[in-house]
Amino acid sequence: MSAKLAILGGEKAVQMTYPAWPVHDEREVEAVTAVIRSGNWGGYPYPGPRTRAFLEKFLEFQGGQHAIMAANGTVTMEIALRAAGIGWGDEVIVPAYTFQATATAPMAAGAIPVIVDIDPQNYCLDPQAVEAAITPRTRAIIPVHVGSLMADMDALMEIAERHNLVVIEDCAHVHGMQWQGQGAGTLGHFGSFSLQSSKILTAGEGGVLICKTQELADAAASIVNCGRPPSEHGEVTVLGANFRSSELHAALAAVQLERLPTQTATREAAVSYMDEALSEIPGVRVLRPDPRITRRSVFQYIFAIEPAVWGVDHGAICAALEAEGLDAGIGYPPMHRYELFQPQQSRLPVPTAHPERFHFAEMDFPVATYAHEQEAVWLGEAVFRAGKAGVDQAVVAIRKVYEQRDALAEAVRGR
Image (cartoon, rainbow, N blue to C red; front, side, top):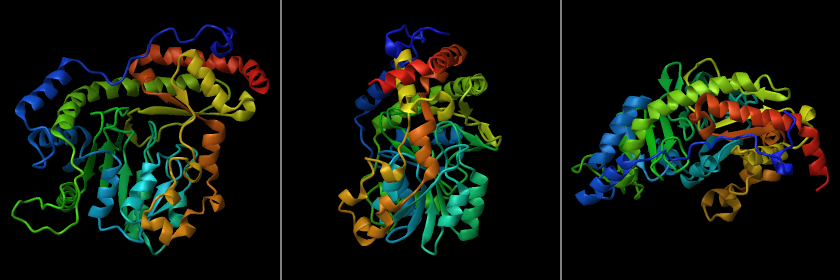
């Protein structure tokens, strides 16, 4: 294709309209209407009947035996840390390439986020970097499964077992993903899932925390429910808060969950097709899924460009792809350069008591930094929900930008 780039005044390569998100119809309207008519809208008494029913169905799909629902997928990570007894001065290892919530959750629990680099093959937490960061104060690891890939859970669980560490899987991107037949979020001690508006299982807001044992689930539920014990006749043993989600959110999530298996299968087939199609474009490095991933879900799809081949900044490439009709972006900044992660601006005690742990100018995460500054391109999930046709359109756009890379580079230089 030699047509002029859309960003330079040409026609868009993508001729189809990708499907909107979230998908909804009268089933959501009926579910929410039923909650309103019931008069039981909120989250108390906890858990409400719709919350309980949703969690049962979620566990049937994702795996695991115990789960709680909370206000969002950020607070679920804080709840997990507190339920595991992790708090003041403890260290929690987190990846440098993730949404800021992964690092703020330990701070909210009183712990210190210890940021480490990622694996260039999957942009997930690097087990070797984790091993190197462990100290006598380390209590937990929060691996983040990014985009459509998973961290090496075998290696991370081996490290955790050897050092007696708690593992909290950040599964905000991977509802439906499986590792060797086992659902993401069930391999560690906890699995934290977001139901925020953009996520592939959404209730607008909300979060689910899968817990390895009944004891951990009871502790988490008490923290969510203002410290109340799981049994109304039990003794209050934890300091809790109102982190409850509502029956309205549970009703929405339950209907969305009905669609998720089919959506997951559609995206999984399309993402495998995308891997092969992109591998034929020069200067593109496909982030191949680990063969131990036995069911793949897609929130975002990430591939890497080779700057020396393209000769133009990947931010300009993403802008060009946007103009061609693709939802494209460069992804997360590394955590030490992330404008949303500003611990020094908080009044939480951790940055004040441990300022040396937040000297970002002295930190170096070369893989995460290179991903953000040079090579990562993120595509939205709608491409894959549109099936083979959606992928074909995306590949045409990416190839067009590649073939017109010199014109794009010249336009960037002339700005």
